[in-house]
Length: 61
Image (tube, rainbow, N blue to C red; front, side):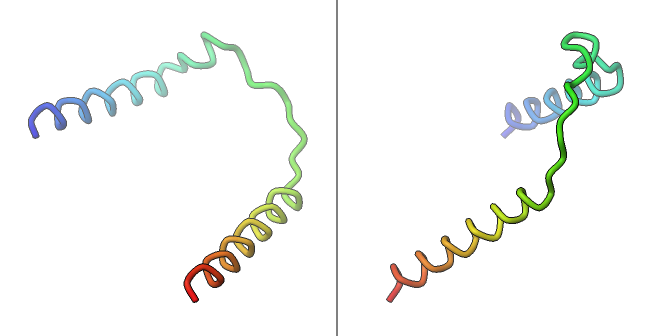
């Protein structure tokens, strides 16, 4: 239990340290520009959810 707590505290500290100092951007540079297509994203979410619900209903008969 104690080692898990130390691990969590260390992970949170490292995440905050990296985020506040901007170390990811300094190391890797700015992210590339991307085209935002929310319709494509949400369409894939709807299709995946629907197929999962249908498969679940068919398997639990």
